Length: 171
Image 1 (cartoon, rainbow, N blue to C red):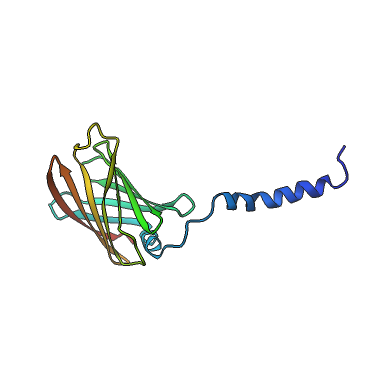
Image 2: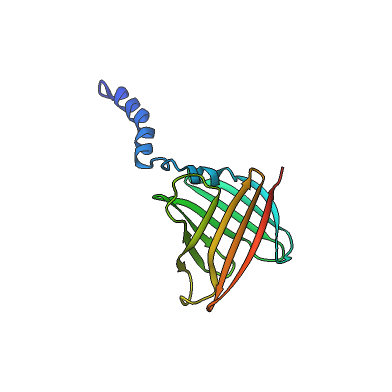
């Protein structure tokens, strides 16, 4: 048998529990730069300037809007994932490379949506040694709503190789 007032307490708990969950997991702080990256959501096609075959990229906003996931599908190569997130006043990326390692890069402190984001190497996860070949820098430039470019620099035992990719949004 329920005590008097029990239904009220139960209904109050049911009403307040979503509010408590929001307090425990607050939304990502506002970041005009990160909001600009979120606008990339959708499918893109492009190519490397080195002459590599066409590449497909899909951007998806995930984890309650706190992460932008880039799913890279290069022709004739293994797929890769790059995760973009906010850390203070910077944007951080972790690239899950087909080589099996995970370089993390970050921007300098950002004050707004600038359209060009330079990510510099911070650390290398999943590597057998710190000098293992890995992606070292990324420059992502949002040219307009339907065109972006990426410049990736790959370090291999002190030698750097750079390739530029241009993408167009799939309508």
